[in-house]
Length: 202
Image (cartoon, rainbow, N blue to C red; front, side, top):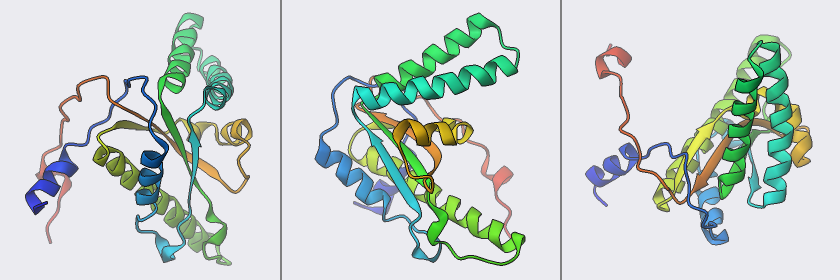
């Protein structure tokens, strides 16, 4: 593969939200997760954790628990009942329809500990950034397998709920949820900001 080929590969990854029902073979899932763990991390502590959902039972438990949380939040926001029902049902369908769901978690227990809040906060952010690196690497590994995926942040709004629904350790803080499978839609063109607006050369 040339550098041009690699740049093309990196630039052609797109968010996919509709999937075929075909299951993803276990060896493919293992390759994807293994590649994700080769992401860079602060102090090489590798604080990422992966909760992998492939069964209807696990997905249903997650969908019901997150749906109840979602409904309560929407009610607090004074959203109409019809809209609440639509949004909660859509959330459940997305969870149930994806052949593979990965809940990406951060476990900061092996990060450095500081006596002052400023440095401790920075250390925690370093753990979260490390986990985000693994998430990006996982998306690219999924792309390399000819699959589609989308990254969502719903678990951030319901961390304890996700932990309880999936019986995760309390040290595993859910950060993101990835839906993956064989694509059943054409990826949309991605609107990119002008380079001049995001780069400052000094």
